[in-house]
Length: 211
Ligand SMILES: [Zn+2]
Image 1: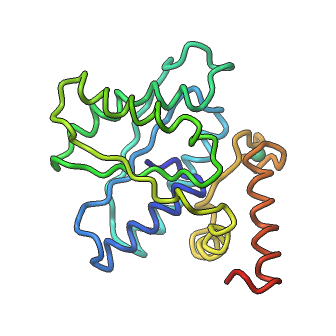
Image 2: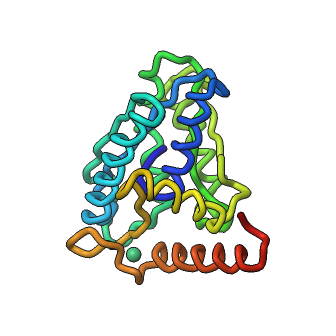
């Protein structure tokens, strides 16, 4: 699952590198969702970031399959609906899409970090994931979920971010309410968390407890 943001781009980059090095046998497919629940500027910024990463990664690794599903009107109230509810409502779309894949068993990578709000809803999320497949009549269990960053902290991604930004400029995103020029707002929760992670990374380096 790839938004084009920092965390999911990290996971995708890691999978592409492992695939290139022959450490994994499965095909890597980037799956993105363009959902009108998400701020329109954020959607634009993420799309731009995905495009930049695809361009770079196709040369660095190999050309990989990347697909986007567009969902409109998927939420009752676009202003009051939390991210968790949005994601839960997406699950039937995902399970339907998984069924179109050639593989009979798919591992779905989710890039949630330690401390993300997601973990408060993980059980509901997992229930919807497996129940959607069952209700839609798919072979069960057709796919499994994997949380690659479950025990990772944001600051651990910062060193990678610095490296990748130099190599693939414009390929990383994190803000949830960007300015009209698609620059980070520096005020939203995601921007604050990102800056705190950068500060923590610098501090840990100075203390000699981070590379
Ligand atoms: Zn922001």
